[in-house]
Image (tube, rainbow, N blue to C red; front, side):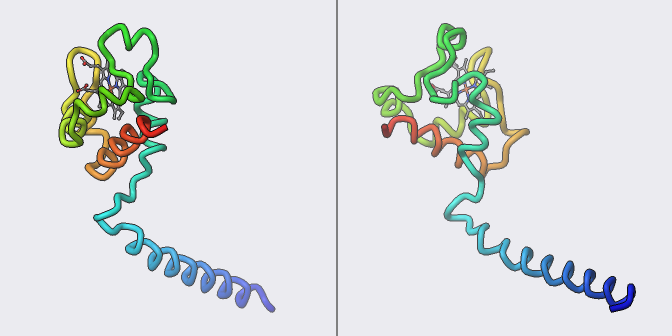
Length: 119
Ligand code: HEC
């Protein structure tokens, strides 16, 4: 194979793999099941204050932060309320995430928060 043929083969391989990736994508973005990874969002944006285990770090607990593993607390809030708090923030310390996370990511991270109660 001369250099040109090698280059052509490379380009062809690149085009084919891009097509395969592009075809793979729409299948993932069915709106009914959020594509966003709630675990990843929680670890990246929430765990600093809410803790990896959802119980909350002591200094934040002292500021009124709930323990996400508490079944009573879980029952006291609807999904819509948790989504609203995540979007708008609450009090002085819980930040608003509507500019930082998509609706999908917020839905996914709220599902993750619900998961803390089921242990
Ligand atoms: C800077 C620290 C901090 C970060 C980061 C943070 N939170 Fe909070 N969060 C708090 C505090 C403090 C409260 C308690 C607020 C209050 O009740 O006044 C709280 C409360 C909450 C509540 C409970 C609200 C209620 O009605 O009881 C939810 C749900 C919540 N946070 C979700 C999230 C999610 C989801 C993320 C990540 C996308 C996140 N938080 C990131 C500090 C934080």
